Length: 168
Length: 168
DNA sequence: TTGGAATGTCAACAAGGCTGACATAAAGTT
DNA sequence: AACTTTATGTCAGCCTTGTTGACATTCCAA
Image 1 (cartoon, rainbow over the protein chains, first blue to last red):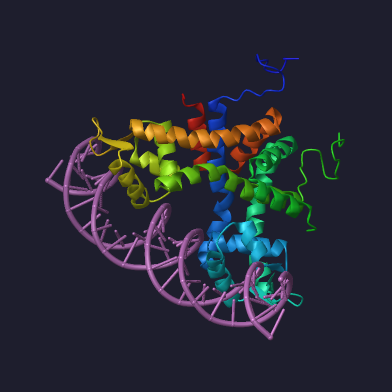
Image 2 (cartoon, rainbow over the protein chains, first blue to last red; image 1 turned 180 degrees about the vertical axis):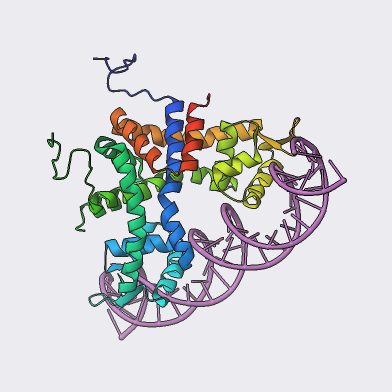
């Protein structure tokens, strides 16, 4: 025991200096910029923003999802989401269908045009993610996801895990 | 060779399915929310926003930095940064000193009050990062940072590496 | 001395958060 | 049947934080 960076205090306790944590924080900050950079460029030239991307992404992931469910995933107010959804519906990228069982609910779907934009956006985002994953290697990728999952708030972790298992 | 998840096509080529990439993308999205959640709460009750946090963070990391350097790190316009800096200076959290060598430059420093807020914010953010790092383990942490670094844009990676080596 | 760099400032605008209030329809409950 | 709750939409207004454009000042450097 105590062979890996041995430190007084027991084998299970991980000593993390403020310096190590700071590097993680700054890495997160700079990386998130890269993460959003490519879709952002595409969105701007189409007159949309990151909020539209988020809505499109999760409607694509869960076709037929309700507004309430989307609100819970995105963590914004219905007024904020509504503004975004309205433009997407007006522009023919999203379709909103009244529920059959519960007619209060609206079920959201991407139209063909919406699916096409989604593909364009996620292609760009996946491309960067792929390059990063390849450069880092599979072990790093596993660690990457493990840390990110541990960083999530409880509600978000629930959403993440549900989507993780969802059929693609 | 070809023993770890063997796949036709050569040992160096990493096969990444869209599904694996998608999980990475969603992990990044949900985790970033957790990453900013704790400082955000503190900031709101003090009447500040995330932009103030970013400025405070990097002024703390590089005391005496110039406005131009900060602009390059933050990647916003000078007008946008100026608005944030002005309130921080008015509120006595940041001090702006005219350069001695080059009097056009302003060198930015945190005041005692600014350093105190910085500590409060980074304590909260470090706390979450520490919990996540501990839960994930040291190998995962290494992978986490490797992937994030590979995800950065070139300019941001330069900034990141410079800060990484900087004396704390 | 002139050009350009660094900075500040003013104005205007947009995206996308927020709150509060109100309307409607449908579902659920008593 | 009456009432309450839920799901959604909408209007109005506010805030932060990003943007562009224009213009002034200061001052280094060629």
